[in-house]
Image (tube, rainbow, N blue to C red; front, side, top):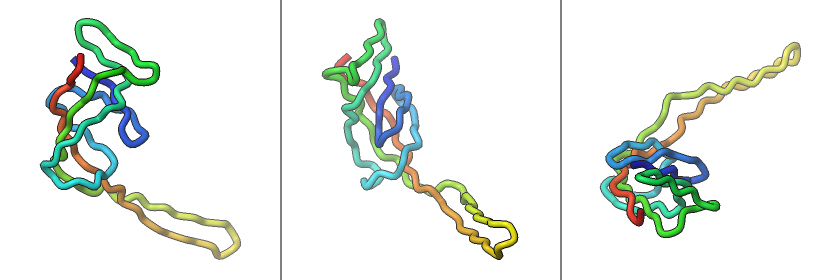
Length: 103
């Protein structure tokens, strides 16, 4: 059984016990929360929402926080002596999917 959820503008496949890497959440590790925006639930039958499936929640727990690999942004214009080099590290959170309730 799995569910497709929309969380912070992105879609993820959530299965019980799965670890998902999502954009950073302002919550302490160990805190629990529910995701209400469920797009699809697959079990014995498949339920597709319009746009969301009514009465289905996915519970999740924040496991940890971290930063991704550094990405180099280099801007350059030829023959104009224009060069800019900057970097960025995207912050993320690891969440663990608990239960898919309401199926």
